[in-house]
Image 1 (cartoon, rainbow, N blue to C red):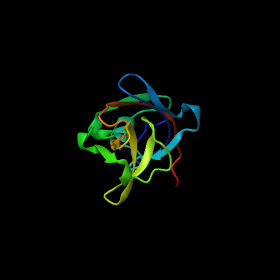
Image 2: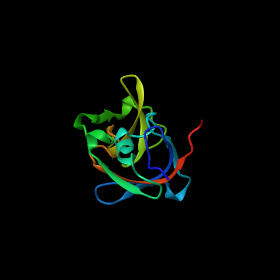
Image 3: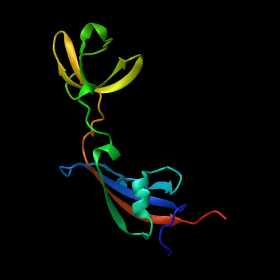
Image 4: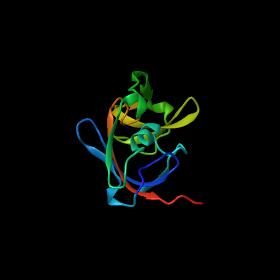
Length: 145
């Protein structure tokens, strides 16, 4: 079989790992992901790494924070007065809640709760981390033609 080339539609399995080795996403428990190279369906660095690979081969791609979920931005950690929030329950640290920031709803992580305020983090939970992806080419689908 010919190796992967730009424009190919692939069936892929991938495992996403944090720097401490924790796997937070693994498609091998379900159906493979279908992606066509050159159509902006997957990260361009993944596409580049897959070119020339054959079915059954696995590539490993490590993405620094700025290419993955972004750098950790301290200014996105804020304390909000409870009276400014419309809470329908008592939030607990680690929980995701929706708050309005500059008129837009945002999903944030609760860091701390006290009687008067709640401290939240608007960064993606994986911000600031280098993420490693192991991507396996399961199949190269035939081109329409």
